[in-house]
Amino acid sequence: MPVVDVIDEKKYGRLLAKYRPGVIRTDAEHDRLAELLMKLALSRERTVEEERLIELLERLVDDYDERRMKGRMEAMQPLALLEHLMEEGGLKQVDLVDCFGSQSIVSAVMAGKRQINGEHARRLSRRFGLPLALFLR
Image 1 (cartoon, rainbow, N blue to C red):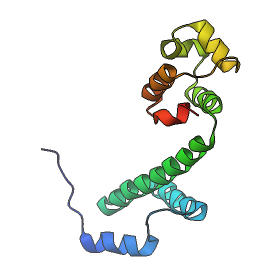
Image 2 (image 1 turned 180 degrees about the horizontal axis):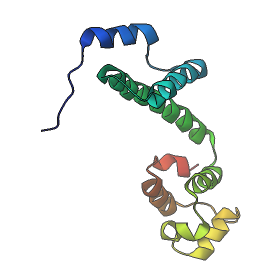
Image 3 (image 1 turned 45 degrees about the vertical axis):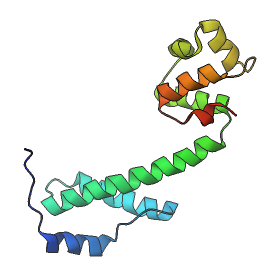
Image 4 (image 1 turned 120 degrees about the vertical axis):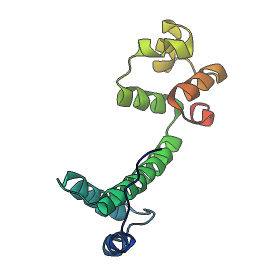
């Protein structure tokens, strides 16, 4: 069984009251909590309560980043999304042969000469862990 550090609920409550973390709805809230996260994470000596707050802040910031990125991805056309994913992942066309079946098909799709078909979209969806619909517009 993992060892769980005992939290002083009063100390943790004071930290929550001081920093007021919550579901992030704006870029300003994101920036404030991300800055706090960095400050706490870079601190050399942290209390158990601060560690718990760091864990909460990481989840809040990651959730907002994920929601913001999802909205951006939904606005992208499939080819632009694929180019973005390749750039972010440091991928080359040859890395996508398994999704398209051949280098020539990858090249044709990337050049805009051929559309991403249903099977390609299914494979890309699985590869990148994204909804199928993002590749089928």
